Structure formats: C-alpha cells, structure tokens
Length: 612
Image 1 (cartoon, rainbow, N blue to C red):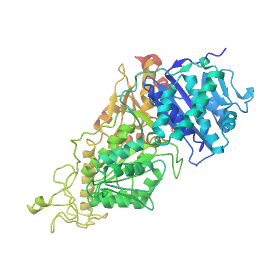
Image 2 (image 1 turned 60 degrees about the horizontal axis):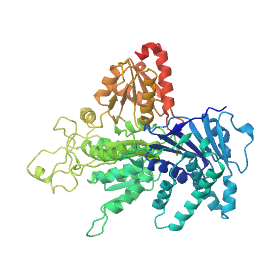
Image 3 (image 1 turned 120 degrees about the horizontal axis):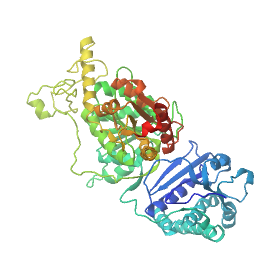
Image 4 (image 1 turned 90 degrees about the vertical axis):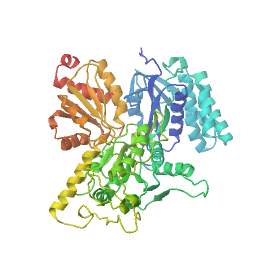
C-alpha cells in the first residue's frame, strides 16, 4: 500500500522536458496560475547551453510558508523526456507522483512501486487534434498544463486570464490555447482519477503586494532609476538580457519629450575588453556608465579594471555569475567569481563587491553601485548569478524614493577652482582616502590633470619614486577602509537559544538558508546567522566570527572563495571557518544546507550540547 504524500499548498513539481520544445513557457504558466490563486511559488529553469534537443528541467516550489529557495527532491515529476527517465523517476519522493505520456507505455520494471503513476496519452491526443508538427509540439505542453490544473484543482480561469494578457491583440492564439487547455482538463476530469492525487492548490492570500520578476530585469530598472546614461556590453549568457531590458526601458523613459532625442547611449561592443573600455571612458567624461557580463567577460576586462582602480575612474559592472573556469557551464549557476572580481588586474588591487540576494536587491544594489562608484571613484561590482538573474522570483516591490538625488561624490566645481581652492587630483584633503576630481572642461585654465595608469604624485605628475608610489597606494587602501561603512551592511539573525556556532552566507544562497535555519531549529540545533552583503567586509562581520567557536561559510563554488577572502582580509584563524560548498551548477537546496551543518555540528559536540 502506497503511503501517498498529502499536501495542500506545500509541494514541489518538477518538469523534465527537451530543450527547444517550448515547454518553459507552459511550465511558467503553471507556476503563475498558482501564484494568481494567492499561493507563493518559486520557479527554477535548469536548461542546457545548446539551443535544442538536450534535457531541460523546470522546478516549481509551492509553499504557503513562503520559502523561495529549492527544497530538494520533488513530490511530482512531469516526465516528458525519455532520455532522462531513470534519473527523473529516481528523484521522486516516496509516496509521490509520476505524470507521463503513455502513448508508448513504459514497462513496469522502469517504474517504482512506492509512487502513484498518472498516465495520459498526450502524443496521441495531439496527433488526433493537430496536423502541423510544430502545433503538436507546442500544444502538447498546454494540454498537460490543462490536465495538471484538473489534478491540482487549479482554477482554470486564472490560466485563461494569463493567456489573455500574454496574447493581447492576438485573439486567435488566445482561443487556440484555451482549446488545448480544455482538451487536457477535460481528459483528466473524465479519465484520470483526480481525487486520487494528494497534492492540491487551495486559494490563499499569502502573496500580498510582492512581484514576480527576474533579477536581470530588476537590475536593468535599477540602472535606469540610478541615473545610468551609458551602457556598453558584449552578449554573454546569462547577463545579456540586462542591457536588452535597459534599452527597452530607456526607450520609454529616456526620450526627450520635446525633441524626441534619446538621452542615453547603448553600444554593443566587439568584445568585453572594448565594452569596459567604453564604460571607463564614458565615466571619465562624467557620464554614469555600466556594463553587464559574466565570468569569462570579467577575465577579459581585468587590464581596464586595473586602470580604473589606479586612475580612480568610476565604473559599474553587473556580473551575473555562471559556472567556470574558462567558458565553464554557460547556463548553470555558481558564486565563483568572488576572487577574480575582488582582486581583478595585476598588482595590489581591491574592488568593491555588492551581493544581492534576490531581484529586489538587484534593483537596489544596481542603483547603489552607480552612486558608490562615483563616490569612491573606483569600479564597483554587483555580484548577481544565473539563479537570481534568469529565474523569476517572488520578491518585495521595487520601490524608489523620488526625493533621492544622485551622489556624484567629490567633484570640484569651476567656482571653487576660480576661488583658488587647491586642486590635486590624487590629494586627500578629508582623511578618507578619496580625492576630488573635475569633469573635463570644468574650467578653461584650472582643474586639468593627466590621467595615467602609471605612477604619479598627489597632483597627477608622473613619478617613479618609491615614497610617492607608497603614498598613493596607502591612500587607496585608506579609501578601501572608508568603503567598509558605505557598502550595504550585513544582516544578522540570532538563534532561538545562545550558541557557539554561526553561519555566514551571501547572495542567492539566502533563500534556501532561511528554510535550513528553521529546519535546524526544529531539530534542536541552534546556529546564529549573518548574511554578508558587501565587500570590503563591515567590522560587524569580524565581530560575528569572533563571537563564535566555529562559523560555517556556505557558498556555491569549489574553493570556498568567501572563506579565503575572510582569511586574507580579516586575519582570522582558518580553522575557525568551516567551508560548506555546493557547486554542481544547480541552485543550492535547503536540504543540502541542513544536512551539511547538522553533520558538522555532530562532529564538534554531542547533539545534546548543541541543542542547549
């Protein structure tokens, strides 16, 4: 007797499809329909780097508890790809459900006796209804969405509303999609035992005013609201949609209403090296400029980044991280560019990094990065990743304070120069390591300087004298110290009971971490937590670590890059920092974090002591 999983508004459905079949749109339709019923969802599209023919998966997490990270495992597998059948079936939780196309039935030996199998001849239904091969492929996806709507008790009117919104002005497409939806729903109600399925969607009011948006779209909006007027870029997965969306939004928001002229410039450069060169040049001229790229692009940009650091020119880079090294896994996620960005270029360089956890912070931090780059006169990186950038997340609304004004930093005006104020391009007059700069053409005779990447003194005069070089480098280090209090501060979460153990994490790991911490507390394991949001590290990060005997560092890369940076920058005992890494290219899961921390806690002390 199968002990079926029974759950309302708390389950995981995973779709196994073939890339290029149009399944992603249908699977997102399934997710959005549940969201429209007031139930929080999170979705993950795990796809290959080729155009079509390879396996792809789409995971939908449904939970009223609001957890937005991957849980691990699935309660129903919608298995539409024979190539990955065995692995897909294996992933189903005991007591779960398998939905598949039985036009060609699978032998019993390739099924499991601890799951419920729901079979529907999807291919045969499509072949009977459509003659065009492409229609058969596309509508097959909509037909299974219709069947799933019946099985899960999803209100089909919500799906129809989504069709109406998606195909507004294309009524024929609306009607044909509704027809396919009804074909699947009617078959399920008539033939399949919908009451035999223990996973159901019930209307709720748990979404509130949150929005469903991907990180790249939010980052593009952040650049618009943050005042960027120049974008130079080269196409690279998974960041390409940022400049594309920036172009789209500027086309609506950055057109002079009187002249019709564009108040922005977007350049698709010949490569990543040229794109960062254009950003540095535009920023030197006084524009707010940014580029969007991924790890391989950062590798090519390092020489210009060294110039921008040493010549102190603002530059904003949005790095949507992916698997590496080399070209790595273009369509898989990792947090593997921390070291390459923090210390990009030759010699002693240190760059400012911001770590957003979701699209909301992609919006906030992209705008903030433009301010920070100008205030600090240095490159600033927004360290997103593929999971945040290309997946659609439920997050707080993107909000902007209309009274906010751009922070252009220390810019000396023509009036100040005319009044005789001393101007040295690399002169620290305030003790924070940040000098004053002038825009080109500020004054006809004063305020000019020569921009160079070689050594110079406080007045931008060329010098190879050792003490002059040391003076400049120490001032740059002082500026980096100033940045510690300008980057977003970390956010701490205290455990329910006092504990000797802590955990540090950042970025997209946050969603799964929230659930893992709750799971650990239910098991009597208490761990204080802190989310790092910027580099250089705020002093409270060091205080947090020193307050605990052991601190787990959870990150999505092989080498524990955050742990390395903490050891390098903060002079900490490496033995105190315990690295927990996940780097197979899929977003980290709550189950992975829970198991990894629990197993280490058991090694450090008896469970009874941990629970105290």
